[in-house]
Amino acid sequence: MSDVLVLNKKFYAIHITTWQKAFSLLYIDHASVVDEEYKTYSFSDWKDISQEISGHPSGFVHTPSFKIAIPEVILLRFYDELPPMDIKFTRKNIYEHYRYKCCYCGKKKTTSELNLEHVIPVSRGGATDWLNVVISCIPCNLKKAARTPQEAGMKLQVVPGKPDWKGPISLCFKTGLKMKASWQKFIDNVYWNAELE
Ligand SMILES: [Zn+2]
Image (cartoon, rainbow, N blue to C red):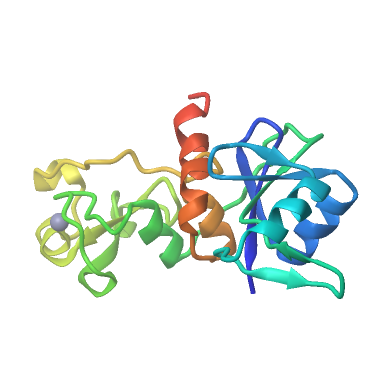
């Protein structure tokens, strides 16, 4: 039904969970609800607020004596780590990583207009991994053929590499879930505030 974005205590998005799990964390006071203004609420505060609101994007859970709004975002009160995330090397994740833009001409395309492209051709020993596979549109792919970018006189517009949790959409890569509007700012927060390596 409704998934909940989980932040660590520094407000970094680290996970996506079910609403049931979110409520159990709130109930034992290991988590707080976070609203759009970054304000946090305990379970009982959130319960009180829930009585006064009529509409809520994720809906409500009703008990015999009260209703409670399903939070969109919660914060773990005692956890400040950033867990490693291993993003699978799949076609979908590669397309997502490069935002459906050809890595040579930079044009945004649909899935059917893109190919996976080995920077160093397989025939030259190029590996099939995050460091050597990008995406390209069909015209760029044909132009490049089985040559290196240098030989083809083409320039990569990206540095190929493995996405990690710091990418703003890596959470959704990992889970295959659709991002909610209310999550965006917290995920962007991770992206903009991440320490660069
Ligand atoms: Zn292209």
